[in-house]
Structures are given as C-alpha cells and as structure tokens.
Length: 132
Image 1 (cartoon, rainbow, N blue to C red):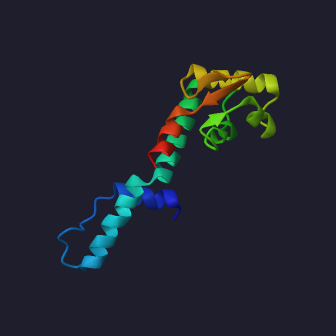
Image 2: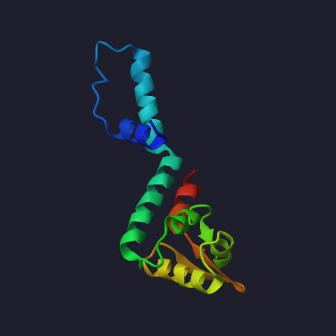
C-alpha cells in the first residue's frame, strides 16, 4: 500500500474499534493514534492541497499551460519566480511569465513585486507551513 492509500484507510474507514471485545487496549490505542496522525499530518494536508490545486488547474487553465510538473513546482517552496520554471525546463522566460500570470488569474498564486523581482506566492501552502 502507498502512504496515500494508508492515509485514506485510517481517515475514511468506519471500523468497529472502540468497544470491540476482540481487541486489546494497545490495539485500540494504536488505531486511534494512527488515525489521528493521518488526520493532523501537515504532510498529508500539503499532499491534499497539491492534488486539489492540480484538479483546479487542469479544469481552469488553458491546455497549453497546464502540466503536472508546473503544479508540482509550485509546492517546492511557498513562492515561485520565473527563473524556477526556466531552470526546471518547463518554459522559456516569456512563456514562464505568462504561465504564472494564468495561475494568478485563477487564484492559485498571488503576484507581488518585491524590488526589481516579481514573486508569485502560494498563500495556501504558506498557511499550511506556518501552522507547524
């Protein structure tokens, strides 16, 4: 099983744990600790946010812009810049700028000019990382 499958199992499965006479206390306690871990895990929350972002981008971005690699790059740091896309081989400088602006249009990123540089902020990722 993958980590995602395990997380879904512990978060979504309705199991007869509490009050089950066939289980010992350590088994019951282990079940609840594991389930709580997957529900509260910031890693799990980040993964879910990335999947939600991919789906939103797939539905709302023009097909020429959307790529899995582009969306994954947005989750390396809570901000992105044109150079990140160029360095990753996703797009040339001019095209990278238009891709990031398309992400701003559908409210995945926020554009902010800092000095001479333009940063594209992933606010939702930043919020998750700052909760830690």
